[in-house]
Figure (cartoon, rainbow, N blue to C red):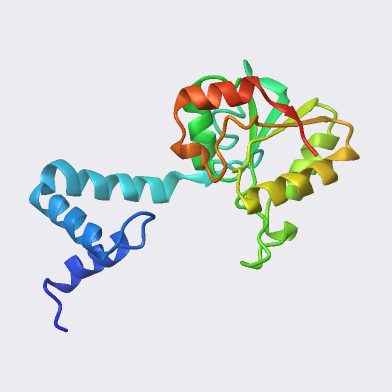
Amino acid sequence: MAAAAGPEIERLIGLLAKLPGMGPRSARRAALALLKRREQLLEPLAQALRDTADRVVSCSVCGAPDTRDPCSVCADEARDNGLVCVVEEAGALWAMERSGAFRGKYHVLGGLLSALDGIGPEALRIGELVGRARSGAVREVVLALPATVDGQTTAHYLAERLKETGVEITSLARGVPVGGELDWLDDGTIVQALRARRPAG
């Protein structure tokens, strides 16, 4: 089948279609919207993408993407260094920050354990988390992982690994629905889940 547009436009559509929640039709609609509003949308987006690609790094402490290292949360001296919230990805961290309920630090695992996908402990930032817990500065680790099979498997594994460090290990209360992802929850649910956290394991 022949391409309906030039190669540059088809490449844009192909890249957009790779984004989460975007299929070929959505990608074509998004590309068309960008092309129709070239000066207001397309050119600023292209510049923002260039700036982001050039400047974003992973925080050497928590693993979150930011334009500085350590990231803005890790560098904030007003936050509680003794309280570390473990999240799957940066999207969950941003959701927690949106709620305004958590004033500690974070640790981004970079994924979840998954036997089906071949993701073992060595593929995640688990060693770094255990190292932080052993440092003596951390008193509590909050496991804020999805209420999915992989999320709960990862939480159980982390609780076992962290036992030897002597830190208190808690997890979000079940205000987070089964199968729920943090970045899709409303702020009130996140606040209640944090307040009602309980010992893990």
